[in-house]
Length: 532
Image (spheres, rainbow, N blue to C red):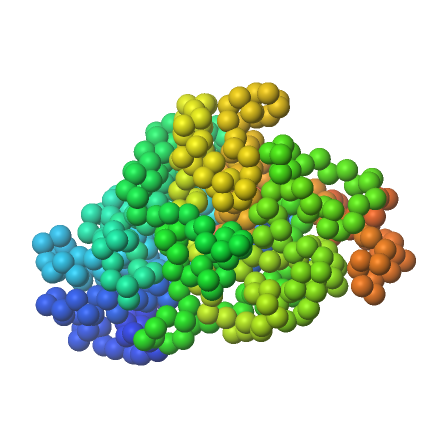
């Protein structure tokens, strides 16, 4: 059902703190008090979804069943949360914006919460753009079921990007900097979060246009690197470098509240209902990562890893001499896993490779978990600048590499990349920038959108998904005979066969719009190309 229709005549989003309560909307809003606007804005945070468990690309695999988006086997759904939930957030944001008294000249605190609503509206439209392309853009709520705003046609990509940029610019005008925030407001949207989201959206649109042949994308790429540069220059963020393994610890409780986090989904938030999840447990028992993705991690010399599966190497040999983020993100054999003891390949992961990032490895059960979910990090801002600058100019100087990618490599103990290094080793700068992004932001919900905007999904998805190599004696009670029909001739686990995976480049770069929403649009919404 087109989501706005469901909300007519009611305020479906609870406006109280937590837990949710019902309230007559006409009695709720008080233009003289910021409290109601804060409580309303709190609902937007509760509607945020975490990025964990994204199996749409070529990296993450859930045990027991394939992802129908990754495998290319989906059909047009009748309804979909991918369509409905962003519109739910848009509806809630519009209600806050509509009730703001003289936005820009009223109470400063009200301006702040209205600005948060503008941020979340832009964020929701960006989620929809990435999946569906142009969608109806609603900047107000409907008055009744016949209101023309309910039957708007799909906006163009230009119109959607203009709306996203405008909303984020408005948001940034009245939001505080992180350094101006009260300690109890950690997790609320800041000026630099709005700027960083604008840079993310601009990079996405600029590269999508460039590699899908729409235009050269330079207008958006320029916005991306200029805004990212502004965020960098403001010195509000820094990379987390504490502890023995800072990259791993950043994604554990020790890293919560780090100045590297730009935008987070909070759990266990004080003075509210205790929000929890179970993704550390799920990652420990129900997910694995593909060899396809792990082969991206460089050798510790800074050169690409060449996966020679004919060699008789142990499981941990695959991790040795590699970028340290490989072992910080995924499990070596014998490393303690959650509450299950030393990691045993395949017994604890369908692919043979287990996950360490976000998961406690001290034997403590973390279920339910209150670990916060990072939705955007300063590391991404650095990578946005590097990629946008390169794609705009088809070049990047060493100074810009040093202030972006090489800061990330310093944390990982990896050699710097430079133009001379790329030339001397017959590498490709674009490939290395993309590699750095993929490795640094692994399992952070960005891989699918990246391979879509790069127009690489048609090359990376319709191939066999591979796992670890079977080594006798290293896979616990698993025997070679039991795996015989699941492995390549070189004993590499086949997680999904190539003949079960598909990608139609004329169709699958966009999601299908749910059929119920098309039916209820009175003909104003057309289906994406080649979806039936």
